[in-house]
Amino acid sequence: MRDSYSENAMPPTPTRKDNNVRKIRLAKMMSKAELARRAGVSTLTIDRVEKGFSCRMDTKRKILEALQLTTSDRIAVFGADETE
Image 1 (cartoon, rainbow, N blue to C red):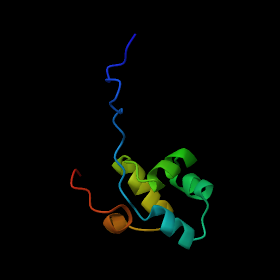
Image 2: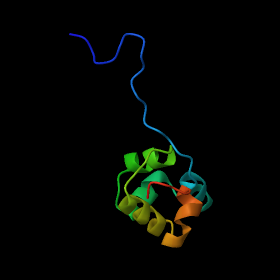
Image 3: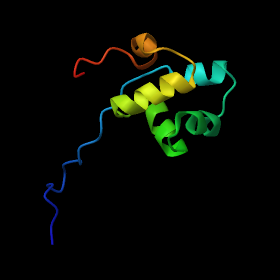
Image 4: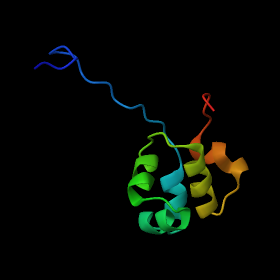
């Protein structure tokens, strides 16, 4: 049985977008586990967000609150997102 991809084609990769979550977390001397606990999300979610994968707006809000930031800091943390 063959894939829907041709033999030479690569499967699509999720797009990544740089953000400042890791930088802010480290400046506040917080571990991924602590940020995840405060935000009420998994450490895997924090890892994926820090690597630049997309997440839901609710997850962004939770991370901002856990970092003791306001929703107006969203662009400084996550960057401008033209789809939202």
